[in-house]
Length: 366
Ligand SMILES: *Cc1c(COP(=O)(O)O)cnc(C)c1O
Image (cartoon, rainbow, N blue to C red; front, side):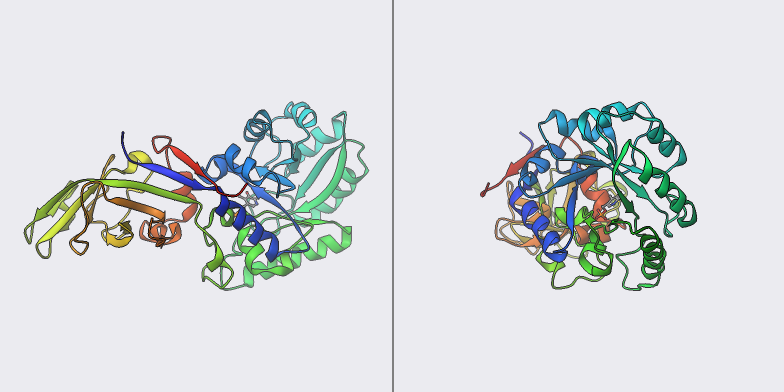
């Protein structure tokens, strides 16, 4: 069988979740497990966090229903709320919580007669200008929802555009908007994504919404002593399936992008863009061969990629290759670092791992 697997360390997931909680001891943290838990398997991750997380968050009702059908009983927040008014019946039946960002969603809620009042997070656009009501609109809507018998546990929610940046001007402007509104309404808050959970205590609310940090990715522009404690959850692992010696000047792969500068040993690894590995990986993108860093040499193909292992004499057919995550010798290659070589972010690499790479789950403690 092809050796490529995405190993998922559920102990690391729990460790990272607990780290998020320790960063914000006065908040509760919804574990954000949208997009199939950032590619890690939503149901498996939810089960691993079930005894720790008081609630989960997903993007849409389809994702929430998958969790319910899998036996997850916690509240589940729909971060974009309903997409059609008739979803409110399912929201009511399954005890989901909804974000509300548009007038038609407000109208649907005010018209609804659910069996149980529906917990609502009113989304305010504090400066990101994607979803949510402008602060001056939000005040009136807040009062309407507050008075509605169909609505419970109303919270004010907002999302930061650049909580990951060292430069705090955007963040501070957004915070000012939110704080002014929150004090006028005496509203409980739900603001912080991973970077704000890690770096901006002022943004910690009644609830926080850490996502990518749960999977061990450092969301901050500059790592700190807390983010260094994050443990990688996914190890994308494969093996060397062929080796060859090249003379100086000989090219490798499509278009001959890489050429040997010396006599070189090239390993072919069973992993390609058909598995979700990013085709934009440049020459020099690191992988771990037997736990040692080696550079990618040549363009990534659909089913394979090529690595310069000239400096790893013990590299052989069958040698362990880690594309990101933790090698058998304990060496870690962070997905964040790989992402920089691919001119992207960890989120796209993690969510991009395709079903051809089977997920294999590991945990010691339960
Ligand atoms: C995805 C998402 C989050 C989590 O963001 P991370 O950067 O992964 O921590 C939080 N809030 C909302 C509204 C989201 O869509």
